[in-house]
Amino acid sequence: MTFPYIYRWDRQGRKGQPCQVTARGTMNSIRVEFPDGYVMITSGNAIRKAKP
Image (cartoon, rainbow, N blue to C red; front, side):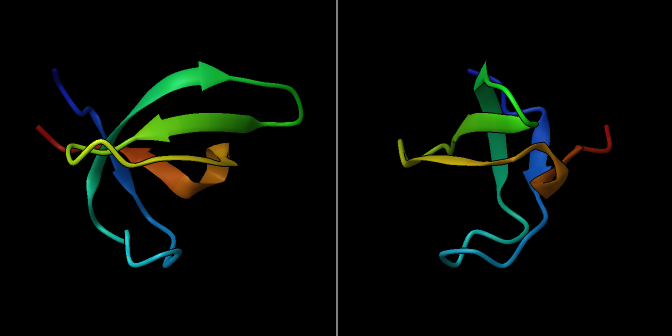
Protein backbone atom coordinates (compact mmCIF):
# COMPACT_ATOMS: atom_id res chain seq x y z
CA MET A 1 0.00 0.00 0.00
CA THR A 2 1.23 3.44 -0.83
CA PHE A 3 0.18 6.63 0.90
CA PRO A 4 0.63 9.43 -1.65
CA TYR A 5 -1.04 12.19 0.40
CA ILE A 6 -0.30 14.08 3.62
CA TYR A 7 -3.14 15.05 5.95
CA ARG A 8 -2.79 18.79 6.60
CA TRP A 9 -5.50 19.65 9.12
CA ASP A 10 -5.15 19.25 12.88
CA ARG A 11 -8.12 16.91 13.30
CA GLN A 12 -8.00 13.96 15.69
CA GLY A 13 -4.21 14.26 16.03
CA ARG A 14 -3.57 13.29 12.39
CA LYS A 15 -1.77 16.40 11.10
CA GLY A 16 1.27 15.55 8.98
CA GLN A 17 0.49 11.83 8.67
CA PRO A 18 0.52 10.02 5.33
CA CYS A 19 -2.81 8.80 3.98
CA GLN A 20 -4.53 7.49 0.88
CA VAL A 21 -7.89 8.37 -0.65
CA THR A 22 -10.16 5.34 -0.83
CA ALA A 23 -13.35 7.09 -2.05
CA ARG A 24 -14.56 10.45 -3.31
CA GLY A 25 -18.04 11.82 -2.68
CA THR A 26 -20.07 14.87 -3.49
CA MET A 27 -19.33 18.37 -2.22
CA ASN A 28 -15.57 17.69 -2.11
CA SER A 29 -15.80 14.97 0.56
CA ILE A 30 -13.30 12.13 0.60
CA ARG A 31 -12.67 8.96 2.59
CA VAL A 32 -9.07 8.67 3.71
CA GLU A 33 -7.24 5.76 5.26
CA PHE A 34 -4.06 5.98 7.35
CA PRO A 35 -1.27 3.38 7.67
CA ASP A 36 -2.60 2.21 11.05
CA GLY A 37 -6.00 1.40 9.48
CA TYR A 38 -7.86 4.43 10.83
CA VAL A 39 -10.49 5.74 8.38
CA MET A 40 -12.24 9.13 8.30
CA ILE A 41 -14.47 11.18 6.04
CA THR A 42 -13.09 14.67 5.52
CA SER A 43 -12.83 17.52 3.05
CA GLY A 44 -10.65 17.25 -0.04
CA ASN A 45 -8.97 20.46 1.15
CA ALA A 46 -7.49 18.55 4.09
CA ILE A 47 -4.93 16.64 2.02
CA ARG A 48 -1.99 17.50 -0.22
CA LYS A 49 0.25 15.38 -2.44
CA ALA A 50 3.32 14.15 -0.60
CA LYS A 51 6.63 15.39 -1.91
CA PRO A 52 8.71 12.62 -3.49
